[in-house]
Image (cartoon, rainbow, N blue to C red):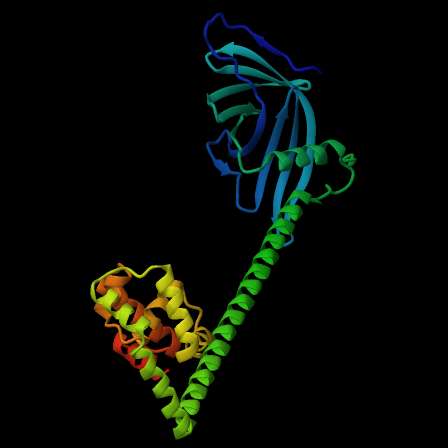
Length: 328
């Protein structure tokens, strides 16, 4: 039977009501006034209206998931009587239908009033599956109704499980990366501690002749033309140029041959950090270092204290770092 909407009303401008979509039975009012609330947590009666047919199905909630129990599939026709009143033709029967609002209708059948509400609980995928279950069910009514498990629910569960697995994998990888990082910090700390011990041991074990020879080289450097010229430039507050820094590098290789390599073994340093350390080794005051490098005195102090904390893994003052530099 094809879909048909006939109008017996002369009202103009009234929107035509279309009984399409998914509806769930909310309640049934009996002739004696007793009301039965139908939609419960574990049982729902659905009707899916599609063109001129509707598909009825009960939805049961079981421990294994939601079950679809297919009901009837029938054709219907609506005849408009005006003022939201319709005649609902179903096979050989006809029932009054009242449109309460866009989401509620009331159908009167044999003295009982069935209130149906628009149902938005189910996705389009679920609605399509319910429709196919009712359409393809071969039960002729002589046996107990079949029960079908929603495959869309299974796919949703699989999706949730996949998401959980991916989340656990991500957490596991992140945790392993965190452990590797902690282990890296531990190994680096032990390496620095060993390097500091080695530096102290070498300094303590230097033979006196070697110590005197190193001091003599340092004294000669402090009397050299390069050093004296450099100190004058610094005292005038002039910024050191590229040639000055190249000269410092060359003289450090001769006077303090292990200075740069020792610092880089303890920590990767930026250019400005290495320059601060070299100027400290040349007995340049922190205030003059700030002037030469065009930095605030507080910035130079922060660099020194930060280097001490990073290398020794404990808080220390800028002067603590200075003492360490002088000892190298």
